[in-house]
Length: 233
Ligand SMILES: [Zn+2]
Image 1 (cartoon, rainbow, N blue to C red):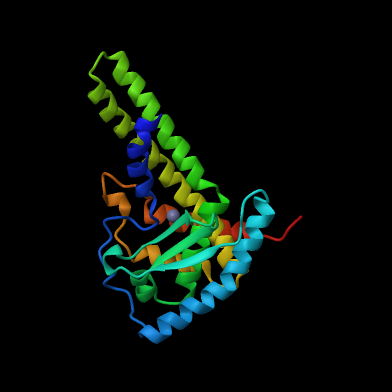
Image 2 (cartoon, rainbow, N blue to C red; image 1 turned 120 degrees about the horizontal axis):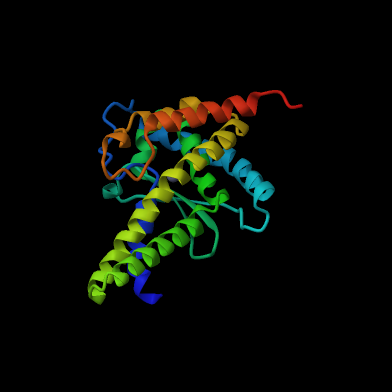
């Protein structure tokens, strides 16, 4: 069990919400730093209560008091993450580069809704379980082949990464759907917000993609919006 901890750590590290190979978003319109900060403050104040309420509605057994953090290290690039902080609160982390390149409040609101969606979708514990299962299965296959313990360890590592990658693609789409609802309820335009991902390189072009293709993400946003706007029975 213990032995897999390192491999699982590697697999979970793949779970950042922006494709890892993303260079700075060159085509993004640049707001001044003061405007970017003001947008960020506005979005936190309006989106957090909505995300918290949806979290309490859908997963009342979880903590829903989101903590928002900013990663100020320039080398962290353009990214956002969901994690659980030291106090056990669900946390949403924005890198300073993401705040700087977001073109408008809709993009920030969408990203925040998407990260909250990972928590509401229980993706962290599921990713861990998925990586662990992948490691176990690949290790068993390797063992059946009568290889060395070292080779078994390597197989477990590959299994964890493969399983986590498969899980990540599916989890990203679910977070997109939940993020669409949160942004909409908070009064933002999810389609305009999700355009943020369209300005990034399309993961569909990468063989080792951990994220779904941009077109599939936009389709998820459009479908979720259509369902949300359909009059009830
Ligand atoms: Zn994500």
